[in-house]
Image (cartoon, rainbow, N blue to C red; front, side, top):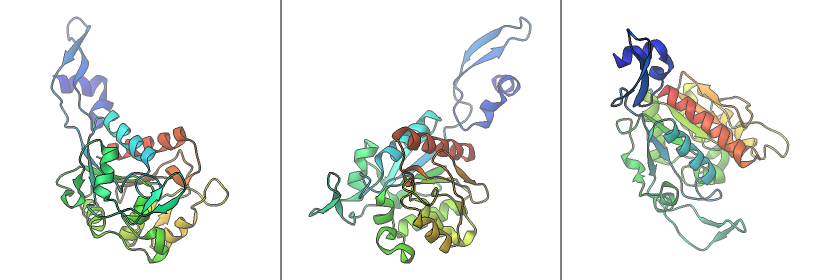
Length: 267
């Protein structure tokens, strides 16, 4: 009865992958609305967030990661954080942008953002999540890949390759922002993927050269503003520029939230 009522008077709710715990139901004779509380009709999607450390210069971009996780739980998703259990390429003093004489672990540092112990990336598979999000930050270019040092000659962490490949094969959606789309371009470039890393030219787009590298891997690259999202329905990929654009906090957050909303529609 509840599902039929929702389908009639609020069909949009049934198209969203979110739990329905409360709703109004039209009573057949009186014509009045009754407030009903019930157990969820639809299971909450489980979305994995793959981090690469903590901090823009040597790990995950904190604002992108936080915006993604907030949008996921706001959209009704269950979030679990994963990270590779490897040493960071290096540690950067974020007050100076200078390398420090330290060693840190990507999994351990990612816990600073996750607020709990992340699971090793080796445990992530399409059987454990309905979709995956890769925030940006230089960690994606230094710890998840070697793009930050080798450019077009880059390699990708084998576990990251496995995750991207397996989720793609399973038809499960993946969202990538900032520099992280370079990972999908490298791994799935031969699949005809379409991605965005923003625009090129001017002080607002200081990393536009990455777009040319992604094209060299076979990816089609759409030029998008910080607020826009690129949706590749065929390959189940969603991307947005985030901090590829030299923007304000709220601009980045809004773009990442839009990306996550599109991911949840696919999930």
